[in-house]
Length: 498
Image (cartoon, rainbow, N blue to C red; front, side, top):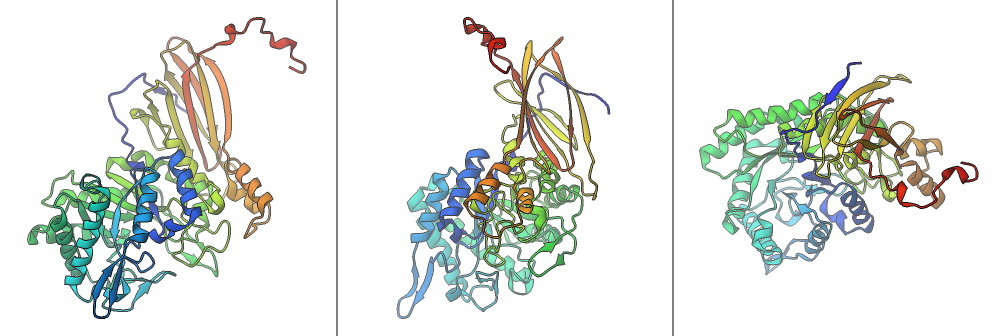
């Protein structure tokens, strides 16, 4: 175990692109109280900038209707309520244009439990009018300056036939051209991009950009999705998903950037990974585990090297792609499980939210930064995919500090700590926990905390720690500001039992 020396300061910036955006179930779910309660938990502890999800144009939000003898009728009652809620939680919409309103659709093919229509519009003139009317309303309600900060992505994974009729690339390109023209006609400064393809279609990026260049179609950013599951093993209610290494996610980020570099567009054109996770299935138990948190540590640490944002899919288990959730823990994507129970991966993000923007050290197992308040902050992780009972990772650091004594606070999540899923299994996997069981799960979801003080000798402090299997920890080192001497007559030895 080699000692790692951490410098006092650095000119290297750590970009927090990992928190620029987070995913959500369809937008209509934002009308539910539990959804908003979960969003409050996430924003208070992590603070994402944007939120992106499907369904802004589907019938449950109710924007588009056609009435006989009248034609298209537009209703923004629910959308206003949804976007008002987002903004009140200090998170902006990253708008995905989809799916097709049923009365505007050219076919009947749908996807998901909630039946989002995935066919092209029956009339592109009506589609353009819908998009222009939508953005005129948004500008009228929220102001042009605000709406210009909301990126607009055209559709979702059009390379897959389940999301776009026949996975027709040329038809998608037409939808994109018609959509971007409608948005830009409303205001040319609103940012629009695509193609929002799945991991197996990264090659679409180059073809998409060639199309935009050839047809002089505006494109302000590229979007792509990233997952790393192998072929799933499907059961009746649960899906097991063996994963590729976490480097596979970062490789997808890098490949997406490389396709931009190969194009005629600037190498630094914004790249938004608008979905990523370990498994792409919303009932895969890995999402509930400590392994998932440790597995994604490296991704959060290095993803900003390639992507301007990468959006974890999703913030909450209030999510209904594959029917209404059937159990407290069911392998949902969310950082927050049902009933406001936070998962280990939630803590990974909350730990990263404590980091500073001055990068002191970064490797495959940890990241070390300095905050503006002078604290040195470490996040470390130890994912272990092997089926072993013990697989510790040891760390030995020598940290430069500008103080005589420091306080070291460590929070840890692993198989036993901060792990409500493990507690849920222990108490018998109740599908619908009662109040007492929920209280147990909330108590079990809290990380282990340890605090100690340490002498700083010759400007440095030694720090050794170990992480158990699938552990993630946050360590904060700050200057000790001791006020013990301000208490006259203080003598702890006189305390009974001390």
